Image 1 (cartoon, rainbow, N blue to C red):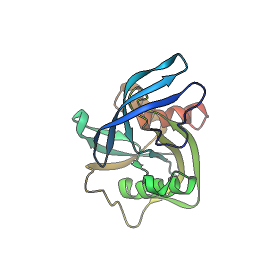
Image 2: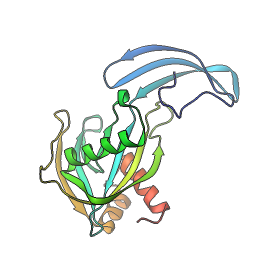
Image 3: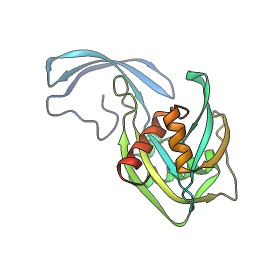
Image 4: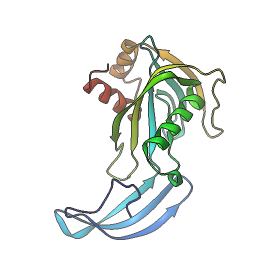
Length: 198
């Protein structure tokens, strides 16, 4: 029941059973029994599988960051966040697929594209809620970005109401105040801060 290549059994971990309880195009829910290093007889767990995602930190030549403002139905709020999108599992998860996915989402959601000769910098991955789901996000910095001549092409299932640039200081203040509360955006900011980018 390991859907992603880097989530593997080993070192005391083993999926003993997994029965699918629910499935739709977005998530699959499993009743699993998993052997762990401290529970050799296994334990019961509900595991939600969701496609991996790519999160893009778009930075302009002047050092501003591009955020999109998107309606998020589960929390009944419209929030600022970095552009992101799910990876087509059939295409795999190699670096080229992630880059293609990220650049597509950057254009579709924000209306920006990577400038010729621009950098596409991997910032690692993280698990937004490892207590119940194997969902994970791959983080990338794209710099410099420029407005796309084609503009944005929002997905029909998304409700992105704005896209604009913010200074590093503005984003820092929005995080400090709690205005930015999206896990993908907070994780990308943390990685950039830890590596000295911001």
